[in-house]
Length: 454
Image 1 (cartoon, rainbow, N blue to C red):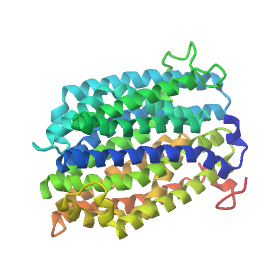
Image 2: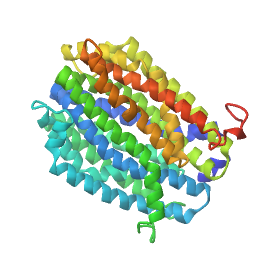
Image 3: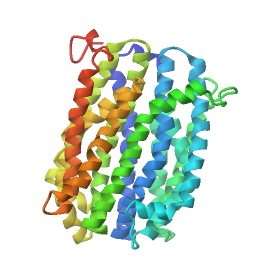
Image 4: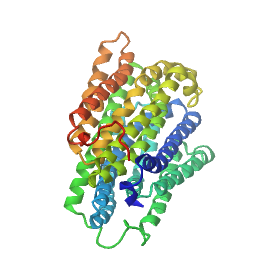
């Protein structure tokens, strides 16, 4: 039940809400790895590089989904904490309508200017065809993607983390089954991988609808919730602006990195970056799962003015996130060749990936804390601080360093690689400063211990 967010022990709640999200996010990240393995071995290194080029475009599409989904789910948790059930239901209806509108706009714009966008994102003459074929299918299914992610966020805040997890696992399993059939069996190449993704999300949306159509649910579909409400939409968009800007900023960073890598290392350097991203993505997704578990707990208890419980959820999540990112630090530093061989058998790509993997993974121990701190402010509706923390790593630090460090290093390619851990370090320091400066607004004075008791 939703009401246990304000009464059950926080560590048990975090396990209850985070574990399904972690399983779901891990399943998603493992799918991305399997997808990359299929494409890398079935379509070649250039296709893998094309997937890296297409990823920022996919992230932009996802950014508009997070603008609605994350903001609305945080708002839903707050309204449930305030026991304002009418507005909570209106949030659900507004999520569907806003996602349909935004996703249709993104799809239309993307399809009209697809090739120029991909070229700007770092595609070359050799990788453009692969990237175009993949993104064309993804864009046609963009409405389903937005609704899928938006409803999953709503399910977690409505007290159904396991149902949300099941929806994700359903999508992942169908995707993994369809990938080899379309890529190898039907010889569809990267188009097959994209089509498998869209079909799997369509099935998951049908599954999600069954829960919100249940008349016994507190938050459900019914008449009167579909008209856009200015208060709900504006507040949801304000809260969701932080993850939106983070994703948009990340996209522009990847675009800049891709172009710098193409200038100093060519298509194979971009493919190398794609391999490293796939590895770090797995563990970042686990942290995102922890964040998703923390979000309804922090939001509900902030709305209910139970600040000690809100803070404990943050402290525990930050601790676990640091441990998770410590694993990718060890893997990247100690076993870079083994990690790379999972994605490709190309000896040139393997050799090019070992050094940058060690460089990028050197800062993984501290980035988990920064991610959780930004999510805390999102969860309790502090949009301004959340937006600022989202922008520090991606815009304030990483973009300038990516452009400047190649001019400092003897090998410009090394400068591109080192810009990533340097920005991670600076952004983590900034998160500590913002957190300490926000002690009063977070009601940290109400607790005397780092981990207050339930």
